[in-house]
Length: 444
Image (cartoon, rainbow, N blue to C red):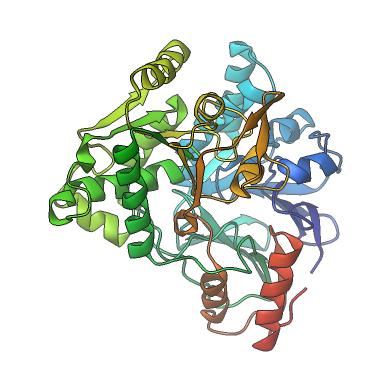
């Protein structure tokens, strides 16, 4: 089975894989942008591989390290169907509009033309059903539990062999989505390995730690800053913050916890949250149970959303001037840009500030330097001392940990014949490969 990687084989970001159906035809799985250290190795985002014979794209989900190069792909002449889930089709225009404005063009006309072209190519599909997308080629979608709409693709080739692309798999303790389920079989399993070398803490531990940090914010009048991706992580945090606030009376540790303001300073995250709400039928069992007693589990009394840039700057000044305790959720998740940078520049030098990382920080990003508790970090070309308290709540990661990944592999009815590890740093892939090899799997 011929498989060529155009990204995320020797790194984490830039996911793009080309599976050959036969000598002439192939399928492209994702086309993401490179970030952090991967971007330094791949500074040119333009498409450098030939498009001849590519039948279609399979889009696993809408994070930019999986879809960020789609504008360059289309500029290179790609004009084939893009298969994805219904939620992915709903979310993609929001992601692409934001991505285009940051790295491609500010022209409303060009952005509008691109979005129309993408909409023309999208083919939303139902989960759990086989669809023939070309002579002898079938695909089936399964929920991956990583982010709303994330998908595991099963691809059946004309000779009957099956390739499975995990995309990014969700953690077993994700608050809004159910964990992924394994397909029956795979002749080739292309498996992500982001956290192949670590285990996540339990749900109770992460909620307790989050509550403790918020209580510290109240006690010292500081600011808790959570750099979070607008899609997925922000909605998970809102869901569990709502849980904390609704049950605060039963906890004796911090009776004033509802006094703290929670500020979501990201227009894009607000729009994503609206889509999440309208597509709640795709939520997991835990969230569905909550919906029966709370029809707006992503909204609560002390929640404020910030939209315009002027409002954003005024919010920072207001917090600083009045020394108000606040929890701020803002993008980007790796602190490489976006509104969170202005909060960091203003508050990272204060010892009463808490910074919580709830997701992966790629090497080379400001988030990685801050997470590793260096003495200073460079933001917008200037050096800022780090006096804030730094916390890592890996339990909020949208990625499966080592136990989840092994559980996914062992869930196949028949053992995958071959496993190819992608989307992971060298150490994570090596550790996971060793663990799978111990169990008798053929891994490279």
